[in-house]
Amino acid sequence: MKHNQAKLCTTQVEKFGVTVGDLVIFEDVNFTLHCGELTALIGTNGAGKSTLLKSILGEVKHTGQLNYYDAKGEHLRPIIGYVPQTLKFDTTSPTTVLDLFMSCLTSRPVWLCSSDFIRERVTKNLRRVKAEHLIDRRLGALSGGELQRVLLALALDPLPDLLLLDEPISGVDKVGMRIFYELVAELKSTEDMAILLISHDLDMLERFADKVILLNKRVMKIGTAQEVFQSAEMNEVFSNRRMLNE
Image 1 (cartoon, rainbow, N blue to C red):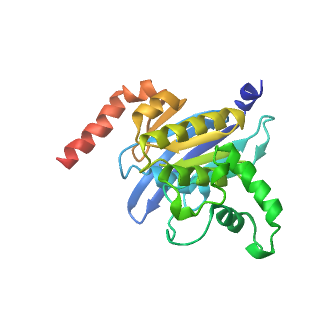
Image 2: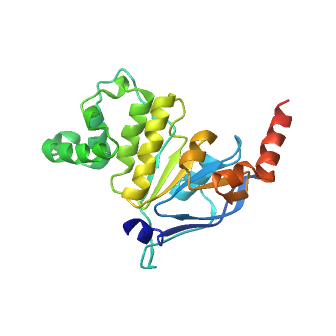
């Protein structure tokens, strides 16, 4: 089956490290991501989670290597999609969802693009996240959940080998959160991509994540949600943080 074949695709994060001056953000980070799987990255604030995602994107200088191998075992450069925590924009602007896509998908001035071609392409992308009805909606009129689904659709063009989600449901209500997780779970299998998600919602991760990585400046534990949540490393990391805050 297609899903099983996709398991052969791997993205390997090898010996990643980021240091700013004398401050070590994280070091010697190693793990493997598989297509068709959702991997959750958890840890306390300051553990280096968002910086790690930006390192994988190539936006932050780091040590180590990122290696991607397709189903044939060929070493390639992966296509990476990214959804940030939030999108900063003027909420009073008349910019629509279609305008956002047009500005991101072409280097030509928006008014020189074929609106019919772009509209068809955008509709297809939005349909993947069940949001095609939002295409003419003003960005400022979207709910938090709707905006994150739009950003998810944008991250799927071109269709990535690896999708990075940096706390995409932060500030989203429970209904929007559940819809987002269900969409991501569907994407990982139907589109055969590896997904790395930062989240603090342990209940949702226990339900949807195939694998969990506990990060605290280095990888402390990797396993199923139950294995990580019940581990001594999990208790140590979060107990220490509670003690520091007292």
